[in-house]
Image 1 (cartoon, one colour):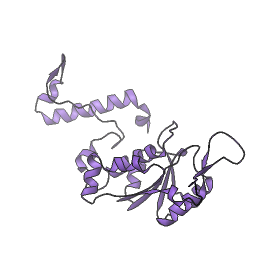
Image 2: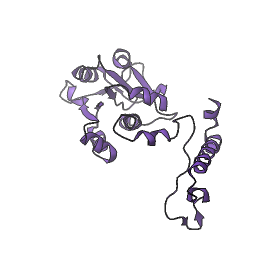
Image 3: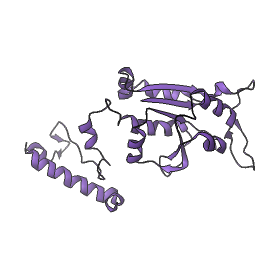
Length: 222
């Protein structure tokens, strides 16, 4: 799977792709990355990429010309373009699974008050909100989506690990424990030390239901 990211701050994106599991996925060729600094497509001597909004108001808006040129350079009209935005459709695990089926995704990293609406109208397929809050960095919002999606690509993480995660079947994940068996007076539940895998599975399922009822009862209603 290929990720093409349009950004004013390439170093933020590059650092992520050179770290941890993502770096291994890139090394194995499971994931490919291309970072485009759309400031390179600005045409004036100051490489200007933002301007004041029509109609007045606070902040600045990303200009359409450099973004359009950058998108055209990577075939943005023929590929799925994602724009993280507080005004978009709410992101969730099912949405991530849908995105993971594409061979390539192009991300536009917004800044300031956002990007010119004409870019959204002309190029963007998915305007996605990662949560009910506002961030200053479109790079971080894009990486949240990328991290959620790339884990679902074949060859990145074992399928059995994905099957037991939160949201995989509408429930949150059960709690995990490892050595030592006792830590500062807190013991691992006896059932996990019993070796009875059938009972362990029942315990884990009960824990998932209880945790979902406590933290996300909306999931149980769905």
